[in-house]
Length: 373
Image 1 (tube, rainbow, N blue to C red):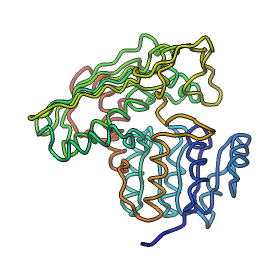
Image 2: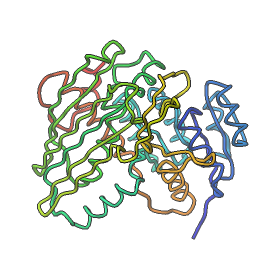
Image 3: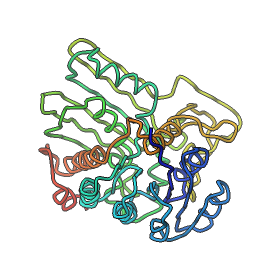
Image 4: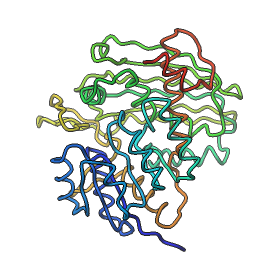
């Protein structure tokens, strides 16, 4: 079996970039690590912490380094396009944090460039690496509940994510609950319904709480698939900051012709209440959340810390990607095609909510952006 040593570039040294960098440092197949962040203090600290080989504030300098064979794009959502396109031009294997871009036209360009250059590119949908969802996927592909005809998905989120995300940019038109966060539960549902294609969507939104920050509180939608399957996708990311869930809780019901799978993934099975004030589960630089005294333990999507290391699905996801590059292992990562499809579907929900009527699918990137910005 051929093994290819990995020269890794990480563009973005924030919360997720740091997690993946620390995991990379411990993986024996990664022979070189270079970092980039506009904030030199943030990047230099990570450089020191993981003993990185190189740091710069200019992603062009990093991606031009001859050592680099693979790139992780971990910048804020609005800033994926330029470094991703340059990494494609350089022929790097790619790991892109979702979404591919927040502009559907840029997402289309990234996807087309990946195809044209035959780049192995994956998108960060960490839930695919959780044991429960891999188990469900196996039951579905082996026909244990027959032909799926109805799927119901509900996501509840602490408002820490939109507040922390929106404070970093004024480009907020496409930073909606579906595009930024609902995409995770939509990706999971579409992965579990693999082979079914949406042909229409009808959605509604409300903005009574987060409207003053330039986004929606909640979006509910119903998709009709090409075989008549119906799929409801509902998300609210406006729950109070003291909500015990660190970030995300979802419920999914999957009904087939021979059975049903009912998923309760709200993390309420492990609760801690304490007089000791707890910090935010999601706490990027510059964001300060109020203290909380009740926690749904294990509700932070990347995983949990023990003995100075992160354990959980993001570790599995990152190491699995390294295995994919190092020795060609098959992995359940979302592809660039999945990532682009997910963006278009989340934006189609926003478009339907804005129009107040169903939207036929597929809908083009130009049409989406013309009406959503």
